[in-house]
Each structure stands twice: as C-alpha cells, then as structure tokens.
Length: 333
Ligand SMILES: NC(=O)c1ccc[n+]([C@@H]2O[C@H](COP(=O)([O-])OP(=O)(O)OC[C@H]3O[C@@H](n4cnc5c(N)ncnc54)[C@H](O)[C@@H]3O)[C@@H](O)[C@H]2O)c1
View 1: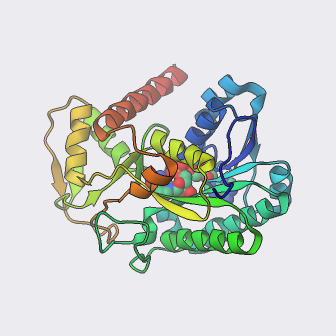
View 2: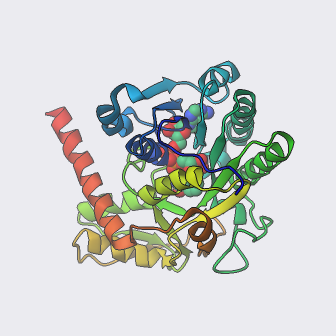
C-alpha cells in the first residue's frame, strides 16, 4: 500500500476546467460521492454555466464556482489552501493549440506547472490530471499500452500533455506529490461543445441528419477511433483519486475500434434515420489513422471499465442534443 488512496467523502476538491464537458461531469460525480466542497475554477473560454446547473441545484453551497485563470498564481494559492484533491482538466483544444501555440504553452504548460506548484505548497493530497491519447501520435502497436513511446506525436497539444505527465513525475520525485494522469481517447457525450468554433464531427453530423442531409465523411472514413463516454471518464477520475496508486498514467478508452464510417452509421441508427452516407474529398486533418487502447492497467489498478457502450452512448447524446434545440426554441419564444 502506498497510502495514496483518497476518499471523496468529506473532502474538499478543486476542479480546474470544471465548467467544461468532462470537468462538469467530474463535479457531478464528486458531489454525488459526498465531497464536502467542490470548487470549480474556469475562465469560461469554453466552459458554460449551464453545465453546472444540475450540480448547483443538487449541491447548493457545497459547490463554489470561481471565474478565473490558471495563470493567476495568487488565486491558485488561495484556492488550493485547505484543498485535499485537485482534478486538473483546464486546457485548450488540440486545434486551438495548433493555431495559437504560445497561448497553448501558457495554458497547458505554464498553467499546469502553476497548479502543481500550488498543490505542493498547499499540501494537496493527490492530483488527478487529464492527459490524452495524443501523447502517442499514430501508435505502432495495437492495442496500445501505456508503455508505448511518445515519439510519434507531432502535435503541440500532445507534446504539452506528455510534458505535463513528466512534470507530475518530477514533482512526485522532488516533493512526493501523489498524482494519477489519465490518457483519454476519443471523448463524446452530453455537454460537448455544440456551438463553438471547434465543434466536433458528431455535432455537425447530427445537424445534417436532423436537416435530412446525409452525414458527410471526408475520404473513405476508414480511420479508426476508440470512443469513451464522458460519464465513464468522470468515473475514472473519481476512481483514480480513490485507488491506492500514485505516479502512474492510465489509458481511459472504450477498448473498441470504430471507423469514422462505422461511427456515422451508428449515429444514423441512433437517430432512427435511413439516410445514406456522403463522401467528400480526403482532407488531411491529422496523421492518426488508427486508435485502439489497452485498458487492462486501469481495470487492474483503478477497478475501472467503461460502462456505456457506443450504441447507448450515442442515443443519449442525441437525446441531449435534441433537448438543447428545444431549450433554445423555448428561449426565443
Ligand atoms: N474531449 C476530448 O476529446 C479529450 C481527449 C483527451 C483529453 N482531453 C482533456 O480533458 C480535459 C477536459 O477536456 P474537455 O473535453 O472537457 O474540454 P472543455 O474545453 O470542455 O473543458 C476545458 C475547460 O477548461 C477551461 N479553461 C481553458 N483554459 C483555461 C484557463 N487558462 N484557466 C481556467 N480554465 C480554463 C475552459 O473554459 C473549459 O471549461 C482537457 O485537459 C483535455 O485536454 C479531452
């Protein structure tokens, strides 16, 4: 036993990026698990207050939402004081990192350093950090284990996430800060950004299908992804805090390979549509043509396995998205 197991019950947790897609699901689950207090730090560049509406209705004054930036060291010192657990999710999207690498450096690298440094100063018991499958780039082995090397990654985002993991390891060695980093694969689920500039392909396809137009696939759609539902990722965060493990990284994925074409067909089925697929010209988006994770380490050490399969997950996503449209229509009425 390393003594790194932390209960959620009665603890105070700080969630950076807690108004985002995954962060808000982590907040919901921490409150449901009996956290004494959950503090969200988010600068709302992408996060939305609506994402925390359920949490704030259910938790009342156990939830505090702070609008602020992880570049604000004084604020981090204040927020980490008396905090037991830090869940660090604040980051920019991979596409924005490519467009604005200096901003990405300041947010993903300096910001993460600030969180780690403040956590050490405040005596935080454990940090659970969001890493990404992007650290692998296009992997050479499938299913890909955590021991796979990171040298095929050529994105700034993936480089920053790999460095985040390295920083956490070094602070464990220098200051004995307990941590777990989770490498999420292809994330989907409710509260995905439905309106922003970096809206995911699933949202664009739902819009087209609802308009009676076929989902558009650029190229043959043979590239594969490994999908994991937001709810399952939030569970992994909670289990990573609870498990008696430290100084480890884990793949968090569905451990099933789905092609882009297969995804479009599954979405058509979830929307009860018999529209055909439409193929457009190949577009070079990224060089990652295949993803499939080995998740046996998370199963063994965290007791984590995905609970929501793609078919059920997509149906839930569609229900959420249809509800968003209904809310918007209600608002303009
Ligand atoms: N969604 C995915 O496909 C995916 C895959 C792998 C890893 N991840 C990682 O999971 C984490 C959460 O991702 P998500 O999908 O919920 O993204 P998201 O954009 O919905 O959430 C990120 C949140 O961080 C906030 N934020 C950004 N910069 C900030 C700053 N400087 N200070 C304070 N808050 C800031 C945003 O407003 C947003 O609410 C991120 O670390 C991301 O890199 C996501």
